[in-house]
Figure 1 (cartoon, rainbow, N blue to C red):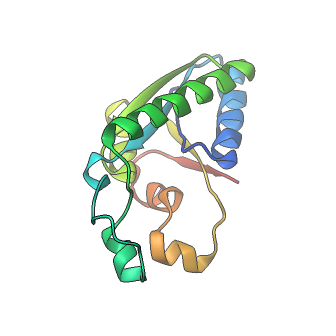
Figure 2 (cartoon, one colour):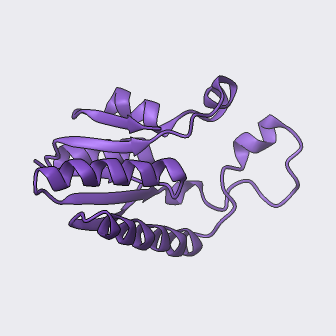
Length: 149
């Protein structure tokens, strides 16, 4: 069995690593930890202050791709170290593209048997405005997804 853990640097993602590491250790299997960045959403929308939700819609992230890659590599390094602390044999991979689509496709193409992901437990209103990667992965992935709170 092969397990995939999708991380975003949150405490919930750390709990997903711990949970996956525990299961993988019991089965003497490795885990793969991934983080996805979407280069298409960086540096969009200009530099004027955001004054409404419509403005926010046009300005997803104000960060260069290089900064996003550096941040993602740090995040993956920390996640790998955490997995080591839990006794898991883990490798990490930086993915590019929309996180939901990219992670779901990676899980299917890599013939993983399951995906673990943390859920931040945001309010229903927040989920309606910005969505939930965990929820969307459950709906899109062709393999079982375990959502860890």
